[in-house]
Length: 282
Image (cartoon, rainbow, N blue to C red):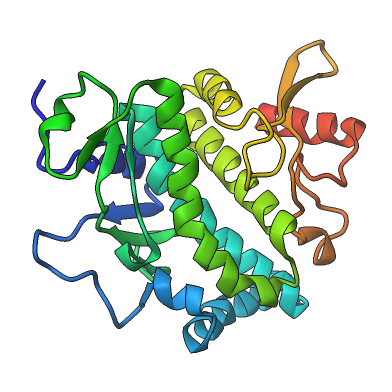
C-alpha cells in the first residue's frame, strides 16, 4: 500500500479526527518547531524554570475559574503534569495502536501550544527522531525506520519511547508536585493506559485496546508501576461495567471531595458502579 511522506501522519490525522480538541502536526522538512506566542518547548518544561511557572499559572487560573477556589501548589502541578502527559503519551501510543509504528520523541522534538484556538487540549508539533516498525511494514523503506523482530519488541519500543520523553519532564514537574520516583511513574502509567483507552473508545476499538494495553503493561515493566489493571464490575441490571484501578491519584479530591473519578483509588466499587451506570446511561 502507498506510504505517506511521514509514517505517522495518518495516525495523527486519525487522532485529530476522532478527538478534534487535540491537533498534532509535523513541521515541513527543514522547518523549526514553533516557538513563541502560546508555544512552549517540552524541553523548557523539563527545565522546571520560568516556562514551567507560566505553564502552571494556566492551571492555577483554571481551577479558580471553574471551582471558585485555589488548589494547593502541588495539586496545581499535578493537574499541569496530567494536561501535558496525557496528550504526549498519545503521540506514541496512537501510531502504535493504529499502524504498529512507534516514534521516538525526545523532549527537544516536541512543542506544545495549550492556547491554540479551536483545540481544547491544545496543539502539539512534533519532529520524530526515527520510528520502529515491524517486518513487512511498507514504511520500513522510509528514512529513520528501524525494523524490530516482532510484537513484543515493538511493545518494548513503546515503553522506551514514553520513558525517554517523559523522564526529563518528570524531573521538571516532580519538585512542584511533591512526588518522586514511583508516584510519578504511577502517573505516567495511568496516562498511557487511560489516554489510549479513551481514544480507542472513540475509534470503536475499546476491547482491543484493553487487550493491547494488558500486553503492553503486564506488570514488572519498570519504570512503570503495576499493570494496566483492567477489571469488570456488574451493574444493577447485570450489565458488565469495565473499569480499572489507577496506580496514582490525580488529587482532584482536594478540590471536590465528593466528585472523585470512577477509577480513583479512593472510590469504592459501589460508588464506581453508580458513577459508571450514570455515565453509560448518558
